[in-house]
Image (cartoon, rainbow, N blue to C red; front, side):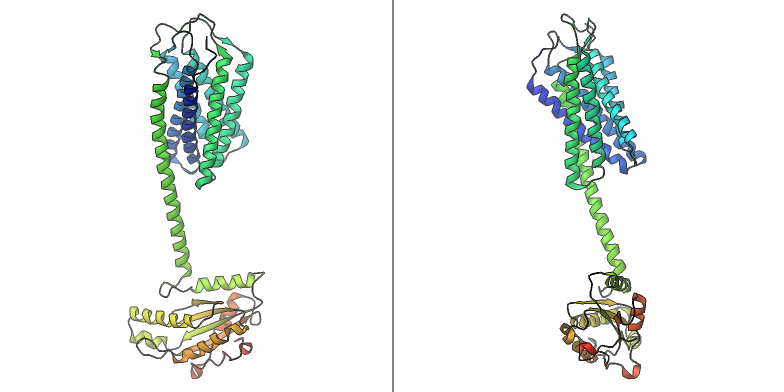
Length: 424
């Protein structure tokens, strides 16, 4: 009873509907892996509705693509049942594929549920015509249609699961590939299924069928497209929302990391950052053979704190930090170790490239604050590995400074960098 020729435009329309349905449903399914509670139920419901309705709509558009000799009508009851079968099967498949952990058995169950839903919906939809004669089955094509539905559904759901583990453009590409595979499963099952079940010549639909084939063709496709368009819109909003959330989380993470390793007043690395950097230098296989830590303490910091309020004192420290940083060469790392002290990590400290830096540091003896107060210094240093092999020992050794009687002399910073002492 089905004509051998097909309306190419309706065939194409049926495939487009299937792609839209699969794309939105599989996206919703992928979202199930990282949601719970009411949100998960909402994603599952939208996914099942999009997939089930899309599969169901594709079937009736496909039926119109190969018209019968007689008028094509359907009974409301079985037509509704076929829609529910597609919805339930889609919901079961997406629920299984959206679990936190997915075994091979669960994937197979989901594939069977999805494939069975497509097959059940198709043959119920054909039975819904309530023909005057019993259908004729072609065992070969019937088996092929079932195999196509099961295999392609399994492949699409496996890709859907893979999508949930990706982000960005790669996830969108995988989702599109999955939708194309699933659409091929739906259409492949439908058009092979039409060969697997036919009605004998002369059979006509029941006279009391209330659903006309004209409505269950392009008009239904249009309604379904609007529904799927809304689903795509939700998908787009969710993608944008998740992208903004990832960016916000990344910025917050960077801010937290920055706050944890940055001195809020001077913007320099803090004690934690310095200790981490020293540990990295010690552990680095391709790092320098040795490095030095130079400890610089503001000896008259307490007097400054008495003479200035807290904001003014912080401004003074910032000014001193800026002047200190200007004295350093490139291969150094400056950190504020405490309220009154700084530590400079110097890679390859015996290199002649640091000669001018050591001279500039000794000239800090003449540094004055913006208010004209002289800055008095105490200094010490340690060298890896001569002084020690642990970050704690190196830092403690560097903090062995000149006595107050010798403040400001920086005698331990020799003119010849080879003369730098270990402070041990």
